[in-house]
Image (cartoon, rainbow, N blue to C red):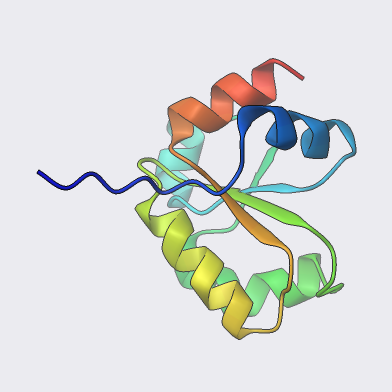
Length: 105
């Protein structure tokens, strides 16, 4: 059995970045976001990244943290943002992991 982990950062590093005010982007759908959300996260659904991120986060050198339900959409979002020229993009993985990290800050 092959296990794929969709996360890039240690819990400690993620906490440090959130304490510094690095944006946390939830790439789930609006409906998923409204049903349960992380207080420090902004919602930019995966299908809207190309339109919304340059407008909301124009600095392509700024660090961005991503999460979704399982980590797979945030993995895809990371690849998409890297392709758009964003240099410092990290995937926190699943909603549960991202919430635990954000709630501890």
